[in-house]
Length: 300
Ligand SMILES: [Zn+2]
Image 1: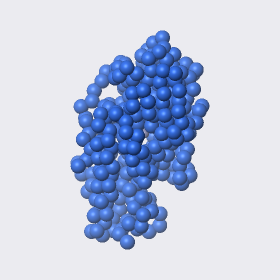
Image 2: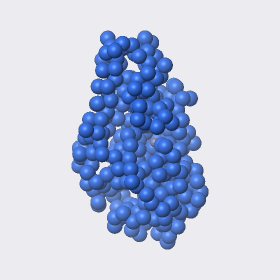
Image 3: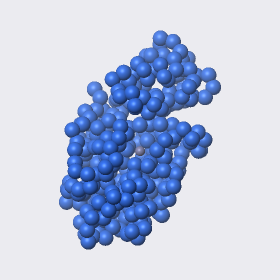
Image 4: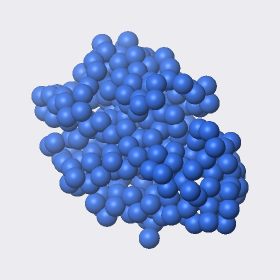
């Protein structure tokens, strides 16, 4: 069984939506096949605020965040990862509020294989500059709220999730999405790390997940376990396909993602590549030369 994705999410763009005593969301009008209905920016706090993932470079969304904050000062800007639908507006917001930007690091920070091959990566925010670098497990004390940063590489090498202790909820960025599977695109994405980071979330035992895109996930344990199973199933599918003989990633995507919108096939190809890199590392699949998008793969 795969995860039960919820796809009936809707909200008014630019309007604050109060989700709990400490959490409010403002949805940015940047819908796309990757962002679903758009980037959900979270405001955390009652009297002074942390902003999680300000969003893309759209000042009108920044104005909506400031309007939602009203008289309350914004003291912290927390960024889950350096993708163009999450981090670019942080500089704009920092300039207007004086708040510091907290993140794991610039784009590529924490990556295993260095920065080679980056030219193929769409969506990276190379201009992202955090003021404060967070380590795994670091606590951010906002006075009336307490956040713990958890390093969760996989979607990107620098991905963080933020655990709001007072409500025992986790802001998961793109690590887990309620409406679809997360894109794992090498070289910044890493499937092995992704699965480890999913288990990390299960171990936290939180009551709710707040992804950047789509609705909250109210049954985290069951949901995240289903995501892990789904990834294992994809891995099994790849190995099964290769029993028919050597194959390229394009052949596999055609067959594995038949029901998926064609516009998402290039992203699916990178996800299959992520699985293959991990399978090749484990010696379960072989390929001539490096495991790349255009290599031919076979069983050993
Ligand atoms: Zn992302």
